[in-house]
Amino acid sequence: MSKDNALVMGIDCGTQGIRCLVSDLEGNIVADGQENILSSNKFGDRFEQDPNEWWDKTQICIQKTLRDLKNNRYSSYDIHCFSIDSTSGTIIPIGENGQPLLPAIMYNDSRAKEESLYINRVAKDFTQKIGYQFDPSFALCKVVWLKNHLPEIYDKTKIFLHAGDFLLMKLTGGLFQSDISNSLKMGFDLLEMKWPNFIRDQLEIDIQKLPPVVKTGEESGIIKASIAKQFQFKPSLKIIAGATDGTASFFASGARIPGDISSTVGTTLVIRGISEKLIKDIKGRIYCHLHPAGYWLPGGASNTGGECLQKFFTNENLKEWDSRVVEMSIPTSLILYPLTRKGERLPFASPEAEFFQSRKESSRLEFYTACLEGVGYIEKYSYYILEKLGSSPIQRVFSSGSGSNSPIWCQIRSNILSKPIFLPKTTESAMGACIIAASYLHGSLSLASQKMVKINEVYEPQKTISLKYQEKYHEFLNECQKRGYVH
Image 1 (cartoon, rainbow, N blue to C red):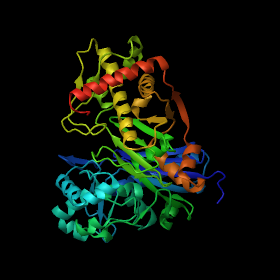
Image 2 (cartoon, rainbow, N blue to C red):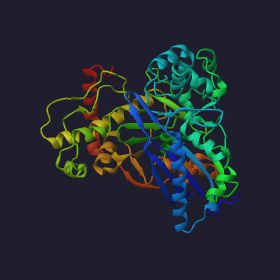
Image 3 (cartoon, helix red, strand yellow):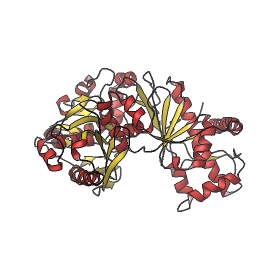
Image 4 (cartoon, rainbow, N blue to C red):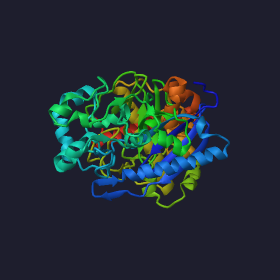
């Protein structure tokens, strides 16, 4: 296949909407489109959406993107392959007719608390082998919940699909298949590449109800003829096995070799690295996705991040606060842990952890600056935990999320981490899906990432200030230790 002028498409099925991007093989975006999802239904610990709306909005989104493509003097025939990413842990029970039997149980639905405790108890050998625990939000816990609470739905279910799998089924005309990234939370054994026996033997789940699994970046299938005709795609358009939205974002970050790490500073701080060996964490802070090249992708999420600014500086101009940080002598002498609610997941697991500060702030500006520093200290300690568990030593930090739009915050983090921070131009999940699709043409995911990710800016640590921050970081650890969070 000639790669001259070849384009790829990425579809992101997110919580708020569908996003579609078309890119060339150098990572230049040539078309995009998006549609909002309106069917979200949240009540208590339950969160559901209508999968049929995803499909309707995906079709509209593709149509919008192709119009944009045409306006930019390209043809839909230039698209050689595409990939889909979606929320992690979302499941849909599909009936014999290929239709959803219920609304999708979303990734942040936590109704399956009892089921999660039960699975962790009966699957102890598996969790020790693979190195993570089953959280109530995991797909497998939701399947067991359905079997326990809605047995009539379970019995009618032909197959359980993740969100991206559902769209794949629609676009191929009935292909039931998943990928190694989405299937992790369904309990797929990434070491032996099969559904483990405990699912059938201890949980009494029919393995036939779980989809076949392929590696991210492998060919899944060909687009359905009627869909190709509907959008004027080439009939041979290939669909490439995708990933979760978090994994897709990781591939869009620029991190591609052992020692690289991606930090997303959004509402919460999410980190993911590349390691040459599987990282196991009995405390449940870290779990590993599998890279198609055989590397492991250890990562986890803190309960703090940019949300502290949203809470403590509600409706205030954060850019103005950023501009005033230069008035401060940094590092500040105020140490704080900027949690906005009870409980922490990373760098330590503690349901009782709460916000603290070492003393009363001298001004709101000092408090603001200390919030930025606090997230930086948490990030540094999280990296330490990764390395202590055996991950490849961290060399380069690739950063994304709304927090990365703050130059002063990036500089403070670089000083705390004593490492350069690289800011990619486009880090959204749909771009990651484009990179996954392009990996089929480039020959590998690492090569596709290398060729397609554009770095916008690099923040280097300032030696004198960075040395001062190392002292303050140890004070931060001491404050955590006083409260029993760090031992």
